[in-house]
Length: 178
Image 1 (cartoon, rainbow, N blue to C red):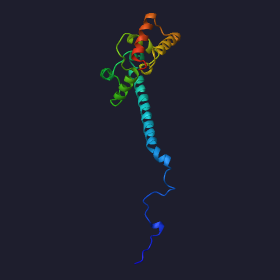
Image 2 (cartoon, rainbow, N blue to C red):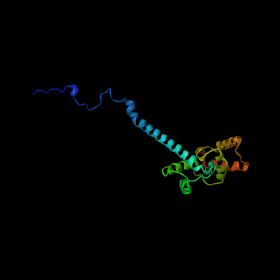
Image 3 (cartoon, one colour):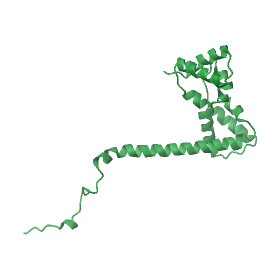
Image 4 (cartoon, helix red, strand yellow):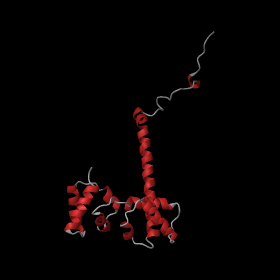
């Protein structure tokens, strides 16, 4: 019995043609590229949520309160949720779907601080120019906090020598480099 060979154009390929496969360096980096794309989409969504939350804050909260009242609260998620719910009960116009986004924004930007001497100084002085997120993320050595505080004095922060020492210890202890 004679065997016949199937013409090449009719054969089924089990692997991609070498010219149609992605180069090896792209195949090995594909998971990394996919992860970067997912991260970029998450960051974009987070930025959109922050914009939406800030608009809600400006339109709904600041129609009755100035920002200063919000800046000095330093509440956790439960505290902000209770406050937002109370404000809705009093007539604030906030869509139900916007509440979690607003609360997340408030916690991130005006969230809790550790208790201790210096907390009230941070709330009453530092938040006149900075949100709490910036303060919480500003990890510095005691020397760097001292330099930062001197810079803030030069910018117009009103601190007595006693307050300076108290807030310096507070920031160094709670927001230092570990």
